[in-house]
Length: 609
Image (cartoon, rainbow, N blue to C red; front, side):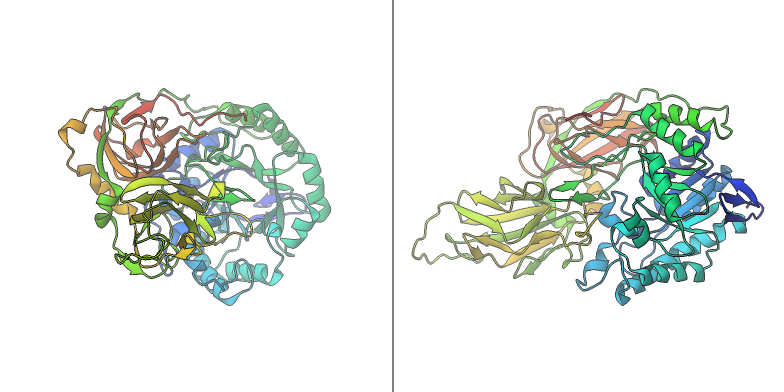
């Protein structure tokens, strides 16, 4: 621990031990970076001239089930804050409880919403009780690491852009009380987009207001100053890039233009937190989604066009920002190494069992009369199988062998009552029929016949992270009907994706090995081995695949989708090993080429539309 210091808000500046202090911070989410790489990313922030690291805390990662609290491996917030201190830097912690961050459900745990009456982000007793559990767990980590205890933490944020959501002052006061009672002594902040309405709704007396913006800097600072006449001017989210969603383009911002705005901010005496300094990756199934009329799930990459790219290498923006910062603060002479080409590899992809064949090993089946939601199943994230037996035309789920008026084996129309959340592959007797997708507002599909085994594979593509659709349930919402008659008697199987890596050892038919032209129709597993001389970052090329998930050495990288813009999935070096590296793919649709390839550099897609 370093000697104790005092950090405070003065009349015009932050004050460290009574002297003016400018916060030069960069956002770095520990839960989006492999923990073996935390120290490297923190060090590179210092080399750009930053003196502080900011992070959100993701409630739903630490507490996937009520009463749990996980801090191992990539969730060791305490270790992360200690590494910040070890680099001689300060830390800002923003625990929410709501964080947005293009993260699944904005960080709020799905279990919170199983009670549809719970009142989120307001003074509702059940919500406040859960929030109290969460924040007390966070502050057990943060309190002994505050600057006045010899640690790195200098600021803690209350809620997150609350003025864009509500104006429940009693709720904000409750969060402040929880925070202070837990032992947090450093200054508390809020953040809002700098409009009078949002600043008024999201603030409380005694909390220092900060803004979120990436342009029109002087105008935004003027609004902040009008609303808060004293204290330091702070942009707590200086947006230097943007996130991507599937089916859109890779967002970039001009480095020179961003550097100019940063210069204006620092010249005005402001403090800054660059969002993001290093974006990282939505590993696994952690991405969020937006829905402002069209459902738009966020990509696996959270590169954000940040100063440090997804692989941790400096970009043009790194050097432009470093030069601006050098005008206002000392910058180390040391600089990060430039990116080197990653290994270029290729291996055959052997097709394994279909998902339906493997289903028994991936989850337990239960019978439900009506179609349950994911949330009613206690299945908060991932995929599930829903199956029933179709009888005669227009009949319900039970098979009818007796015949009857109008009986034919002709086509029919399958309809979901309210909405598909979020993508549903329909199979009849194991053969793909088609897809219903939320982003295209599809909830009906034609069946070629109305007899046989109907299976619907449903994927939760990410819970909405912003706005009024926070906390909505997943699955086939509103039931399923065939030709207007409700289908019943469902066999339902939530799939435990943590079991998938075991398929790395499945037996493969000899003729499949080395065949790079064999395709696959429908959800199926595939397997490959990549040989490496030593651990290294890899960029897995998914161009010739359809839509699915990839594991390397048991680590779930995340989602891929031919829709783009993202073409490569990053494999962090700590996930790899010298020798054989096991690759397992769950492909929902079909491979154009059944081969695994890696590229020398990432390809995150086109930048214009």
